[in-house]
Amino acid sequence: MTEAKRPVVLILGAGGVGLSLAGALAGVARVAVACRPRHAATVRRDGLVMEGVWGDRIVREIACIAGPEEAPSAPDLVIITAKGFDTRAICEEYAAVLRGSTVASLQNGIGNEEIIAEYAGTVIGGTVTTNFSVVGDGHVKAKSQSSPMVLGLWSGPDDESLQRLVALIRSAGILVEAVNDIRSAKWSKSLLNLSVNPICALLSIPVGKAADLRLRSVIEHIVSETFAVMEAGGVRTAWPSAKDYLDYLFSVQVPDFATAYPSMYYDIQAGRKTEIDLLNGYVAGQGERLGIQTPYNRCIADLIRFREIDGK
Ligand SMILES: NC(=O)C1=CN([C@@H]2O[C@H](COP(=O)(O)OP(=O)(O)OC[C@H]3O[C@@H](n4cnc5c(N)ncnc54)[C@H](O)[C@@H]3O)[C@@H](O)[C@H]2O)C=CC1
Ligand SMILES: CC(C)(CO)C(=O)C(=O)O
Image 1 (cartoon, rainbow, N blue to C red):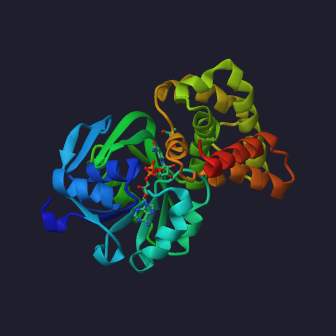
Image 2 (image 1 turned 30 degrees about the vertical axis):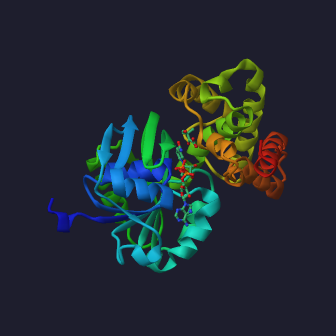
């Protein structure tokens, strides 16, 4: 494909996920990525260093932008990879670019697509079940992957945009599937994050250690409460019951990410805010609204909030 015919993709949020995606798509699209200065300076000077299951290479064909004034004026696609607590702020900042555009979210948790829909033309929801981390400035690692990326149309008029995005991501060599029910897929992915992210962040352990029998009961309660909330809210996932999901969690997902640390661990280590309000905090809030007791989700959310504020 000639350079001029390549689609223009704008990625908002350049951490583990955003930089890895930028590096992967740079071979098939013209990629601009909204970067903090520390990554931008290194990527401009040395290129982006990628390692791991998405390939080992140095990618130079990425335009790092510092703000909306440097953004491509009419990107074919915008992909948001900022943390969920930054979604509204980044949408406000890039509101002029998002208006009428097709915008995909690859973020964890529940609630991002609803915010993005206030700003964008068409919204595509997504999940990515790969472990990414920032090794250093302009250097990312994709450690392990448990299942393909999932994308589905959330809202908006451009129903062909989903197939275009899936084809683009596939052409970059990334495993991806389109689904009809993206709301269900977001909850399916959230089950993993609800189960392991806060526990690994609080205890400073990799995902594999969440299989320790002393932690089982806590995880089982978190998942059972979440199934009760999902059932009352009319949400179905790939697993008919909490037990079915727990079997999958401990036989497939936990082993797949055994030595990986989840994104919330890195947030707590860095003294940053976390996405707890889009995960266990969200379940607890929904439980309250629906009259369902969620003491384990509420407790774990409180513990994380304490660590967010009081740090180490
Ligand atoms: N790290 C992982 O293994 C996975 C993460 N996810 C999800 O993907 C999303 C992104 O995660 P990570 O890449 O780990 O986060 P991250 O914290 O490494 O990266 C997000 C980046 O966005 C930047 N950002 C926020 N607002 C910005 C703005 N207005 N302008 C420019 N940059 C801005 C932040 O400074 C940060 O560098 C989250 O929702 C996370 O839960 C999903 C699957 C795996
Ligand atoms: C899949 C997993 C656990 C991979 O790291 C993730 O989504 C996260 O870290 O937030």
